[in-house]
Amino acid sequence: MSTMLGKPRRSGRPTPEDSARLDRYLLDVAGRLFIANGYAGTSMGQIARAAGASKQTIYHRYVSKEALFKAVITHLSASLLETDTEASLRDPLQALKEVCRMLLDFIMRDNVIATYRMMIADGYRYPGLIDHAMDEIVAPFHGRITTLLTAAVAAGQIRSGTDNENTSRLLTGIMTGWPIQQRLLGLYPLHDMAARAAFLEAAWSMFLRGVAD
Image (cartoon, rainbow, N blue to C red; front, side, top):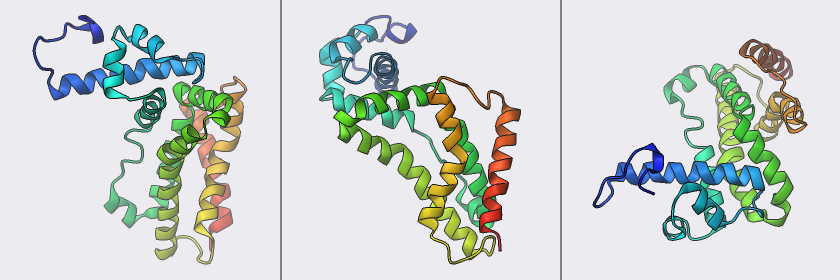
């Protein structure tokens, strides 16, 4: 435990920075084990041993394995959709395109798709975990896209009269459906920035043809 995080711990009461650093470390270790072994196949004891920590340390921060897994999901989705609100209001359609770019980049990350696979394998037995993932990852993207669609209608950038909730789901499907399918099959489409940018532009053009005045 003395060399956790690659540096000796200070003696005495840990600082808030020390505590936050330890939390990030424990979440990273737990996330790797959940991905490798699945939710059901990972125990708090395994996580403690892999982290070089005591089970008491883990349980002091997370009262159960479910609470720890939910924290891993929240950690995975941290800092999503940090945007410039004023810029979004000036040009909501451009802001919407940037959100789509972020979404595509996000689902292409190895740890994200590995977590996706693990939740598909184990999630049906633990619906509360799926609900949490939906709240922490899917809902923020959906909410942001819906808000920007509404703003784009108000700005006269796209036609009015559409169901923005449903349009948000359709846009997400256009942007991520095929890439997610390929990644789940162990393939790696859009493996470089140029390929990803070209796919984004093609999907975006298709979307605009469907919503333009």
